[in-house]
Length: 426
Image (cartoon, rainbow, N blue to C red; front, top):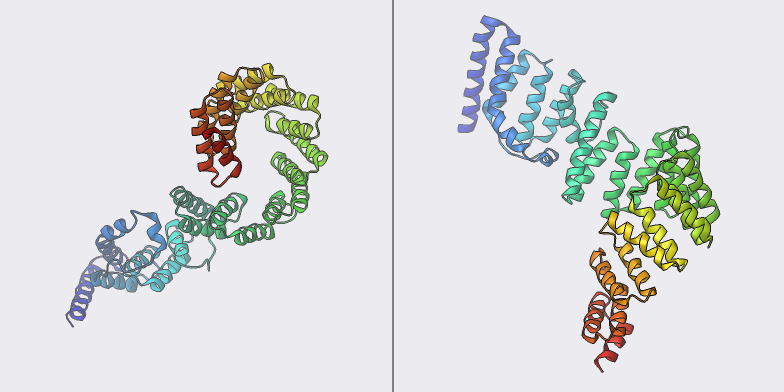
C-alpha cells in the first residue's frame, strides 16, 4: 500500500511540476526538464551496470525507482516523438528487469532516430535483429561487437565471445567475423556450427565475389573434403585482385591429397602474386623436397632467403636441406644463423644438435639437444630418448637414466623407454 501511495504522490508531483513548467515554457521544455531529472537519478546505477560491458547481454533487476517511472511517463505524454526519452525509458525498464518493455522502448527509439548508434546497440543486444540499421551504423556496431568478442576470447570466456561474434555476424557477415566464430566454435567442439557459419556466408555473397569461394573452401576444409576445398580456392583466386592467400590455401589442400605437382603449381602462382615475401618460395621448395629433387629444393629455399635475408625461416630450411644432403658443416652454419635470428626456435636447435653429432662433436650435440628440449613447447619424449642414448654413449649413466625417466614421464607405459632404463640400472 505504501509503495502505491509513493508512486501516486510522485506522479502527482511530476504532473504539478509539468503543469507549472508548461505554463511558463511549453511542453518541449517541460519534457526535456523531466527527462534530465530522470536521467540524473538513473546515472549512477546505469554507470555501475556498464563497468563490465558483458552486463549489457543480461537483463535483470538492478534498481526500480518509481519516481523515475513517473517522470519518464509524464515526459513521454508531453512529447511521445522524442527518441532520447524512449532511449531513457528503455534504460529505466532494463535496470528494473522489465526486459520486453526495455526492448520495445529501444525499438521505438531506433525508429525515431535511425542514426542513433547507442539506441541500436541496446536494441540489438536485447533480442533478435527484427530491424536492420543502415550500413554505416551496422558496420560501426559490428566492429564494436568484434572488439568485445576479442576481449572475451582473450579472457577465455568462450560463450560470451560467441555471443558477441554472433551478433556481429548477424549484422555484417564477412570473412573476418566468420574466422572469429570458427575459432570459438572449434574451441567449444561445435564443428557443425562452424561449417554452417561459412555456408551461410557463402549463401549471402554472389558467386562473382571471391569471398563466396573462400567461404565454400573453408567449409569444405572443415568437412575434410580437400578436393572440393582446393577447387573452391582456385575459383576464388581467379576472381580476386589479391589471389595470394587463395593460391596458398589451394596448395595446402593439394598437399593433403599428396598431389605434389598440383600443390607446387598453386604455390608457383602464389609466388607470382607475392614475389616479395618468402612463404610461397619456401612452399615450392617443400614440394621439390618431397619429390626428392634436392637441388630444386635448395634453389627455392635460396630464393626465399634472397627476399627475406633477416628472417629465420629460410635459414632454418636451408640448414635442414643441407642436413638431409649430409652437408653437415653447411647445415651447422645455416642453423646457427637461424638461431641468431630466433633464439627460441626449437627445431633449429634440434637439427643443429644432429649436425654436430654427425661431425663427431658429441659434447656440443648433447648441449644443443638439451637446449632444444627446453625450447620445445610440449613434451618431446622422442628427443629425450635420443638425448638419453647420447648420454649413455658418453658414459654418463646417471644423466642418461634421468633423461629416460623424464621421457617415460612424458610417455607413460612405453615399453621401449622402460627397457632402456632397466638395461642401464643393471
